[in-house]
Image 1: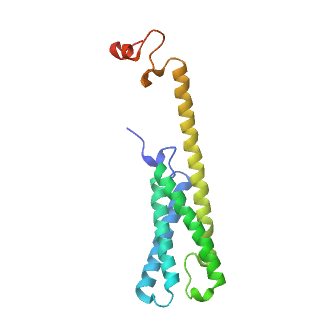
Image 2: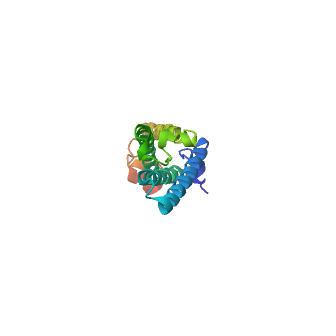
Image 3: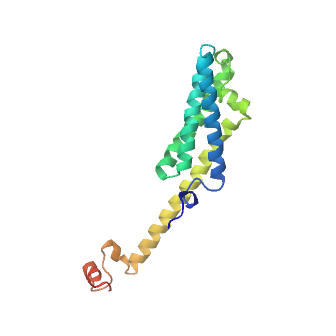
Length: 180
């Protein structure tokens, strides 16, 4: 029986990654719900702020799902979503301070996330650092596995790759009688 994906050593859902996913899920829920209510009830008051909150909610949902999945493809998408989040926090934070009239109501990313204890500013940094750690770990495991395979082939164990079982034996001989 194989272990669940959460306990696999190359999963982003282990250790501090679980906390990261939980925080992203909380922000996905809160930003999306807030934007939904604001857009539905008072969109004309601050449309830019509300649309940016909705966009932030979508980014948080994408980050939550891809961090939770943890596959190599999901990690690449998570890097993209965390990068977009960081760029958004910096851009909207600067914009909200430079032109406060555009933001009569705050967004998740206004003033660099000051209304949320600056968590929106530091969260993507932690997300990117966590993803970098897991990418390096996965890359190291692949390199180690490849080195072990190369060592096995150098010692004559390359039968699985069709390279024969030793001097005077072909891969077909090994397969035919099950031994070298």
